[in-house]
Image (cartoon, rainbow, N blue to C red; front, side):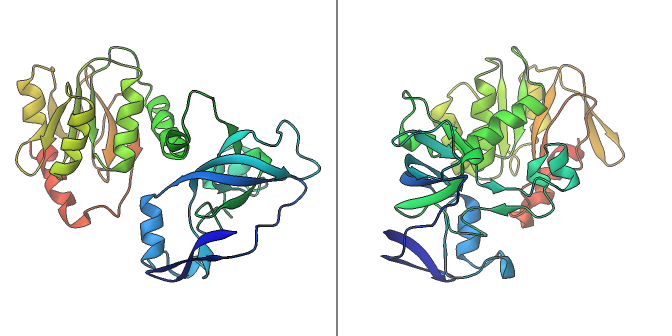
Length: 285
């Protein structure tokens, strides 16, 4: 089969490689579409250090059809369209025992710790597969993994219909969480970032959201001007947002505290040198 192989950091070759072997509980997937995650960029640049063994086939966000399967696989047939959960967990550690698989002590990821979906074929355990509905295109289904983060964050934040929401950070995951939240509430959304392109992208998809560049404006001031009943008070170096306002997405901003349900997503590799601007934009209020 053909595959995009990372033969050395910052160098990918499109080359012939053997099809992946698969075990009794695994499925061979003919890849239809794969997307590039920020993690793929870091792996490509060698920023995952000794964790990555070269050569490796990257790609952990992908969709495809069942091409073959192990003898113990049930519930799938050849030709079924499936999306893949890339997390490989042990099932025995304390985290796995309470089904908190992303915190597995020996966690591995397809496309990082083993070959992934930037190839014609990939293998995965049947337990890691999710059927894809006919109404969802391959292109959209390839984003199942990041969208699952968006909906999980919305669930953890207990977002409800009619909520007003503020999102700190409009990167890849921030955009996915915002889109997931929009399926729940049609009330006012604020998106705060320091990169205009991110704000413009969100605005192009959702013209009714209010975008704020924290390098030029104080987010709390802007939200207050729009009449959203926001109050912020200094407390232990952070801010307390009143009961009528939910902070649901905090991007590298773990100093912000709230008495309300909120979800903290830390993605610390993004613009670290500018984080203090965003923090001050809220904390100085």
